[in-house]
Length: 244
Image (cartoon, rainbow, N blue to C red):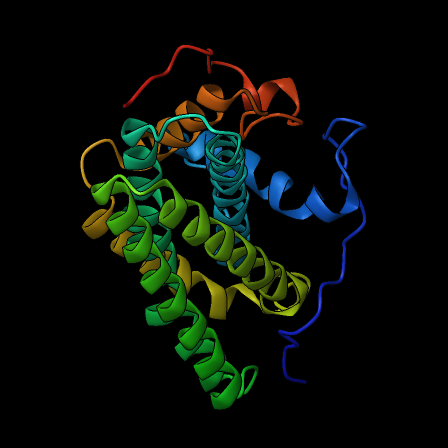
């Protein structure tokens, strides 16, 4: 049975999350707990689809910060290049250079080989990635030129399209679509993800991008990525990280 990629099916809310976490958020947030522990040096095994879900959660936090800052622009506040440099650093060097490559170079080929993803559907996902990359360049141009309207338009288009893309993947490509695929197939994907991270994350590893996301959220006053996690998973992170 092939995986659906055009609908979102919420999962049952897992244990260990705060009561105000919605069903829609539960799966990525639960996965983020293990991802966060590994970012801090733990060696907690995590299936590849859970790793990607965790990254979706982190990316959603940055999208929220970008939307909040763009509302300030619409309200007449000045363009803040330092904020947008952090946002571009995250979406360019994490969303596109790390997360996207895990999917395109490792996950998608495996799903096609297993008969779980049609070539046409895979091509649509790749096209979506490329369109989002083009929107990132438009955002870069707007920030460089100091044109707040260009920044606002590109952010509105980027965040809207990215949210639809993430939810489509979560609805069938990642969860629950791969839950029953055995470890003998999934473990090599995990190994591939680890090798790719070693090549692409750069100095600071995952923590570098975690800190960027937290700084962006703190800057605009929205919930941090770890909000809603049980204390064990969210402990050890203060509110003073700044990377701009």
